[in-house]
Length: 65
Image 1 (cartoon, rainbow, N blue to C red):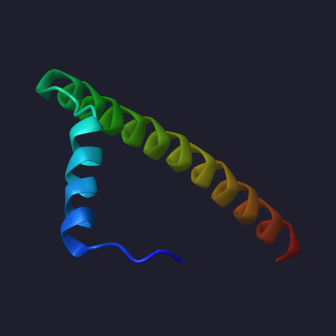
Image 2: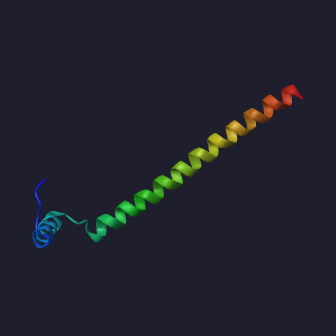
């Protein structure tokens, strides 16, 4: 394993960081909105599934009792 000078390492890190394409403010806002929308859709989906399962278990337990 080759040892590198800490200054060379920091220079390479800076060069690699300059290659990164950072998202624009608009792209961040759109991505954030999409995350909130998908969280809301998933929440409603799991609420419906949980309600159906709850009613099914209550019905099965009602038959036994």
